[in-house]
Length: 166
Ligand SMILES: Cc1cc2nc3c(=O)[nH]c(=O)nc-3n(C[C@H](O)[C@H](O)[C@H](O)COP(=O)(O)O)c2cc1C
Image 1 (cartoon, protein in one colour):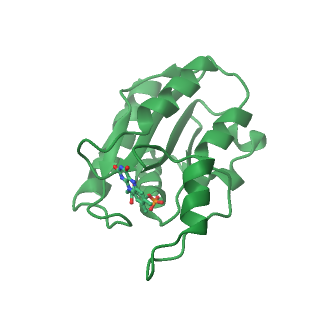
Image 2 (tube, rainbow, N blue to C red):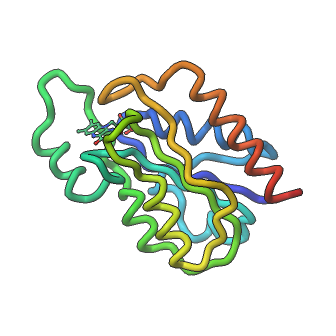
């Protein structure tokens, strides 16, 4: 089985979750930021896991990224805005029928989710969602991830692989 994990991450939390998911899937699966996940990488994949952060109650968008770039909080860590957002990446993704799974990073609570939006976009392109969209929890605005979340991400990856190959 060929699998790939694609993510958007400004401060590294989603990147860390994506790597843990890739580890859980196993078989040399890699986690790639949107800028490195071109059509050549996606072609031939049997499973694609897609994730991004929640900003301003929604999946990260060009608008929230612009706000983050233009109004940095004093003392906040610099964001990595070098690649396209996951929304832009999804816009450019060709239609397909293979297995997919969506995840986000968020501060759990009534503060919105991103993974269901990713799942909806993927379904609209014909992809087959194999598990419920999942959120992984950060403790503050810029992280860190809550303790145990990387283990949970690894386990989620293992379950994904089992679903697709089983
Ligand atoms: C400007 C800003 C707005 C945020 N808004 C939300 C929000 O509305 N809901 C939420 O659950 N988390 C929110 N967060 C927390 C991020 O979702 C969280 O830090 C995420 O893990 C960042 O991912 P990254 O490190 O991969 O960029 C916000 C963080 C920042 C910096």
